[in-house]
Image (cartoon, rainbow, N blue to C red; front, side):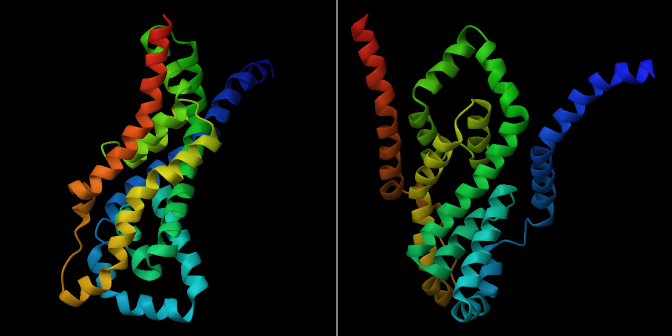
Length: 249
């Protein structure tokens, strides 16, 4: 009896930690399996082959199609499955630029928030606490991000160099609030989402010509320029704040 009572306090924290990390473990597991099992399923060719049946179903069941699409997109993003770019094109193809872009951005934000909450409830809180307790350069970096949280979050979303999955995890580890995370995620992915939704809205003509859409269009100067301009605007408050601090000293 004595040994049992002595072990219980030690076992409980371990079980509690495992339970907290279960959502993140589930996401990573499904992502790994999905990357292998679905790598050739959610493709442009699949969309091209099923375009007529999709349009027919949409015309007969618009609300159901919209709900099913948003639900599928949330699952794709929430479990980091391959095919997010194709899903965005599909949103534009089925629903046009508007409300397609809202369906795409809204579903992507919900899916990203699921990853954020899973990471925050598990490793995120511990990581944030460790960073708060740290000293030196690490603490300065965290304090700097915390001071200009919204700007840094917008930069991560607007600059394509930061992978989407990584941009979902970093805020959880830095102790970012849910409200700010959702706000910056939705509006941060909106410019890029708008471009791909626009491409999707024009897929009818692409299909008619038997061509493949140019998914690299977002990296072309006339598209990337304005997006990088938005990223520069996000950096501006950080620069001004540092300039004011330097002047005050």
